[in-house]
Length: 245
Image (cartoon, rainbow, N blue to C red; front, side, top):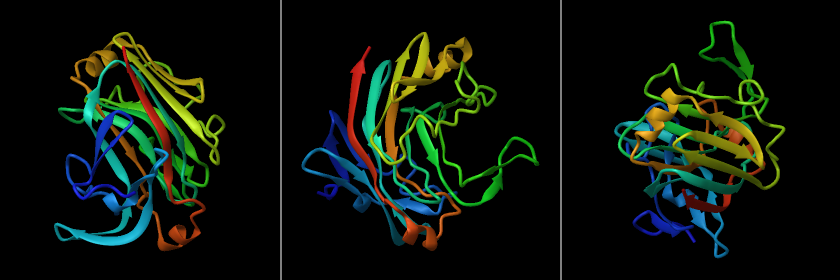
């Protein structure tokens, strides 16, 4: 079934709503958050889609509708498990993440997955470029003190690129454990990030709690040809479980 008329649903012990606190679209993106691209199957599977659905918001047209849900409740300390299958195609940006219930940042990224077909510069100097043909799947943190962003603690495997740990075609599990003394993220049972430095933890622990966001998304390089060529539109979430500490 699709989301209810009020764009809300109950699932896995949480109440969810479509859209972000800032509204139905981000001004830097080319997509809007469309509750029609959120569906819940009778077996409890949540599907977040992508569709060509132009919509004008505050004078700007966003061409793509994507599925995004945000938990009304927040979590702090404990273990969160999410079982999922990624969409497949170029120009995609699905994510499982959280941000502070009162402000942004801080943010905890359990999983961000990028795919694409062209190069563009990153904020690592004018000569650093990456090829988006290579999938990038990584965890991270974003803090108010930008010196801590994505740098706190230890991330195994260099820059946190984990295509070998995630099955692009199959079902995966991402798990986060958060306590006052550490933040750990695991992909399919393998630790991919451990944050245990005091400055980063102090900022995370000062939060009253984090809201959970599950979203399909497209990069700004996404085109109609990419859309037609998608192998799988849906970001599929098979289940979510939170155990408080």
